Length: 531
Image (cartoon, rainbow, N blue to C red; front, side, top):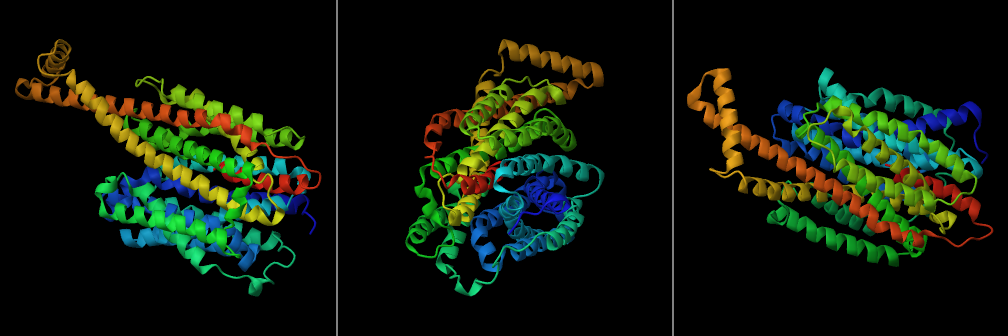
């Protein structure tokens, strides 16, 4: 099958990148609207957070199965149906009138969205000849990096000017147009959908995957909210996750027709690339989680201001993607890019941990710019490395498995950050309270100054002392959270520094025949890591 050219190729690039961005935006767009959604539906923040959890669980279950599902139903058919499911579920989310209904449709939306990343990537790369695929990887990577950043920005704007259902309704025109374009311009692969009868369905593997990965994602997403192992639900799900994941691994390695081909892990470069992908997912998702919460809870930014502060540096980093793709297409090794990218991300973490609490919106511009360059420098080369050594028939399994690892890395990072922030907050608060006891010189001086200021402004001497103590308590609370977030930036940076020496295991043997096909699918993987 020859590669499309000209206008047809442009439409395929536009369709696949837009579909991927749409899916990625929905992983973070609702984060800034949780309070309004909770108020509208009459539930608390803990309950409404299931809107995030249900989407993530559906995503992480479907992503590793995308290779099998695309082969079974036909890639074009599976892609278009997934887009339709995503679009309809988006509309139903917007029309939901109670929490249970919203959670169900959000899960369905995640089922449809889970196919859009890997399948979009595969379709895009088939539209380019092997020698142009690093450039295609750069184009796709631009969208993959931009998606998670656009989520809070778009969500903040819609919440500020409209209402929470618009966070879902915004998907409708994009989904409809992308579906029409995909149906019109994307061709079926030769023999696609004709060998369905010969494909054996791994029902046991699918069941173990759903139980193991689904409950693992639940534990990571809900652990902090449920107070970890003090919750019976977390205990049960943790046991199911261990049994399901271990059972899944053992069964998939033994069955001749696995739903996820775990045998690809026998290739050393691929196995170590998944480790780097895990850390990259941890850093990308956790940084997009920690910074916005710090900006809004401590620095006083609005949701829209927070999103806007993320956007310019990310756009600057995104420009690097096609440049790196072009350089790599000339045969430059991806390993130096990965090392530099991870170092830059670690530098971002340390720079962010060194900011003053009295900063403006643009004080984070330089650290966020370093982050964007780090992502650009590492993600695309990682994708190229991800399928090094794999056989062409193993590409789909390798890509989908790597994407799942990235998602789990993100979930693990956010769970870790939540737990670490809570622990460090309690520690910092205890340390500060120990120095603000009644009679301490600094405490007495500060308390008297605030009390006198309030009496001067209000003339209410009776309650001025109590209000002054309340103000000091809030200041201590804010400072404790501030220090806890800075500690978390340091922790993220440590992960990136620790894995850098392992790049020596990413090198692959050079052969004569494989290079073209390997490069071809390797690019595929890089786009996914960029999420």
